[in-house]
Length: 110
Image 1: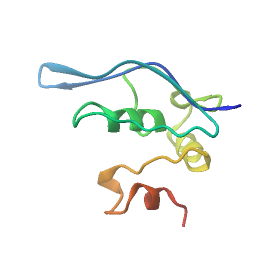
Image 2: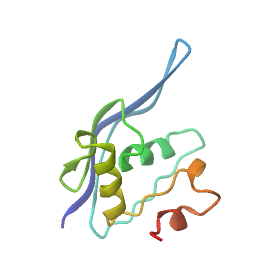
Image 3: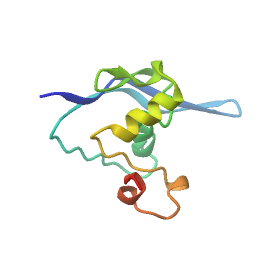
């Protein structure tokens, strides 16, 4: 079975004023073809940040993310967009750019 998405030692931190907030710490996961994955947790636990890093919409502070065999952050933004568009993985649309549409309708092609 082929691997769709693979993250290794993923981390994401944000710096506000002089305070660093770590949202993701050493996340490693593999999602293979035909698997369904649910990410659950309380508000503010990093679910959306994780999805944005896994899809290439946000750059992690450390670690790697591969879509198939391609390292998402070793290709251009345009290539990342095309990979995301053509991937069999169903990526959510960011809430701020989905225009009120559901994540599913935001990911459908016109």
